[in-house]
Image (cartoon, rainbow, N blue to C red; front, side):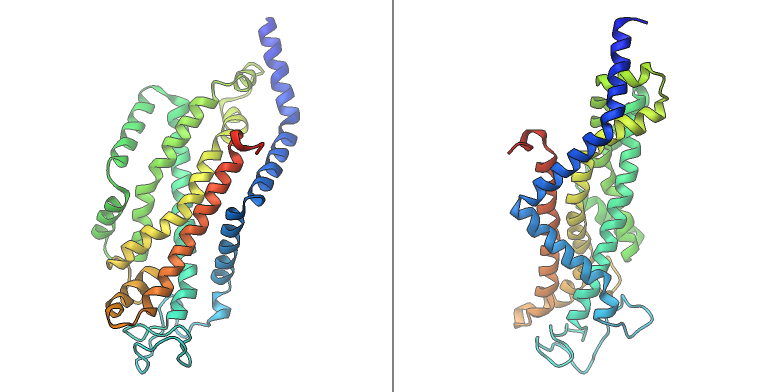
Length: 309
C-alpha cells in the first residue's frame, strides 16, 4: 500500500470518528446564527403562530359541515363589515365567513406547502444525485430535460397544467409539483459533482466503502444545505403561486383557501368592502414574508463566509 493510500485511509478514519461532533457543533452554530438575526426571529415567530392556527383550526372554529374546508355561508349576512355579531372579520359577497376562511385557509396553505415542497425536494434530489453520480449520457439526458422545464416560466407552466387538469385544489398541488422539482435537481447535481471530488470521498473509496454508503454517509449530508435553503424559500413561494391560481378560478369554489377568498372579495373593493380581500391577502403576505426571512437567515447561517460574523 502506498503512502498516499495510507494517508487517505487515516483521513477517512479521522473523518468517521469526528463526524458526529463536527455536525453537532455545526448545528449549534447554525441555530445560534439564526437566533442572532432579528429578521429571522421575526419570521420564526410568524411561522409558529401560523402553525398554531393551522393545527388548532378545528378547536378555534368548529366546522358545521361534513367537509371542514368548505366555507360556511350565511345568506342572511351578506357583505357584512368586520365587527358583525358572529362574523368578527365580516363576510364575503356570497355570505362566506372571512374569519373561518382565514383560519382554515392556514391549514390549506400548510398542506399545499408541505406536499409540494416535500415531493419536489425528494424528486429533485433523486434526479440531481443520479445525474451527478452517474454522469455521461445519463447526466446529459436528465439535464437537458431540466433545461426544458426551466425554459418555461413557473407560473405560466403551472397555469397551463392546472387548466388542462381542471379546477381543483389537488390539481394545483400536482401542477406545482411538476413544475418546481427541476430547481432542486440542478442544485443537487452541482453539489454532488463538487463534493465527490473531495479527499474524504476518495478515502472512503480506498477503504472499501460501497457507492451507496459513500453517497448516504459522505455526499448527501454535505450536499443538502442549499437544497434545504431552497425548500424554506419555496414554502412561502408555493403559497403565492397557489393563491394566484386559485384567484383566477383554478381551485374549487367556496373552499377555505386564501386565494379563493381574495377572488370572492375583489369585486367589492371598489364599493368600499375591503375586508373580504384584505385579511386573506395579508395572510398570504405574512406567510411568504416569514419563510423568506427564515430562508435568508438560514442561508446566512450556513454560509461559511458569514459564520464568524
